[in-house]
Image (cartoon, rainbow, N blue to C red; front, side, top):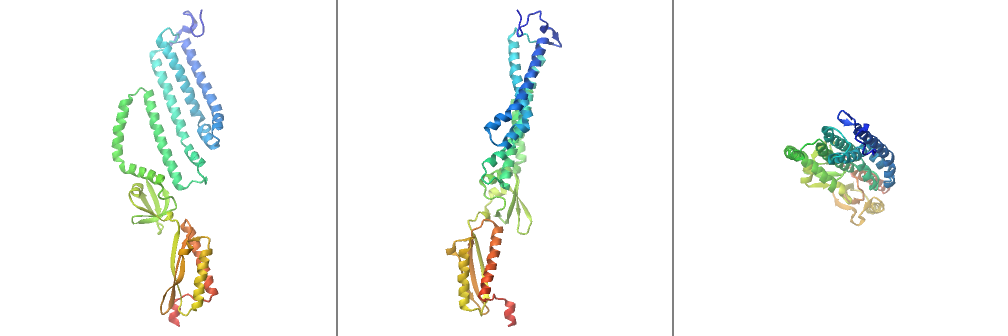
Length: 369
């Protein structure tokens, strides 16, 4: 008695055509249908399942929706590989109705493995883009500065390299290449390449060190050796610094790691010291009042701190002027804010001096008297 799995010897399913019998061709057609159905189901339901696990629409979109074809092909080809392996194992045991040329039996698993590897690599490479979205989930201010963007870019580049390398190993295995010899050859080539590009590698790991340790960030004013300026960009190989002369210094990251870096942007406060010169004929009581009112203005200013350490007093007298020393501390984090606060405070000092009829010393005016 025959059945679908074990047809009788005289069944038309055992008729051969091009080295395959009809039973085998029907089985191959069934595998194709299974692949198409598995691919369609994966593309249809994977976004829904993932959305229940991950609430981020952006991550869901990049993980499945934008790469559903690659994921579907990988799932379908993987299922076909498993089923084909079962069929071929049964063929090897004997008594199986499957008839196909030995060449086809040896090539088909490798072809399916090749398709799975390529599809998984394509899906994984697209999956790398979710690194930025994952970082945004844990970022309190939901804004990324230049340093964070550079770190994400470096991480994505590293992940893509690892994915391509692993994918190449699987592809080579599916093609029947000797992995031992291949890996040994890659090791020798990699060693030679590392020697030739040791400076670039040092700069790359220097960038990773800078980005992880974060001795400075974009916008900080730093001093490295004889170079000084504002950090405008941190790349994988170099860091760009804009100087006070508006020129740009390209600093290799390896130099930054191996050199002391003075970061003015890490200051807890910003000290401002200056000297003012009043006319020698200024009224002493008015000068004393001027000093007291300026100290009161410092204490009342919401942008200053360390009021006890601040002072404004007469420090020197000459034949032509009274010299007053000013010392205060700004509770500000950026140079732009400090410049704006300083400009406002200077105008406030000028208004106080005008109210007290005090004149600032001008050497040209004294010479005309």
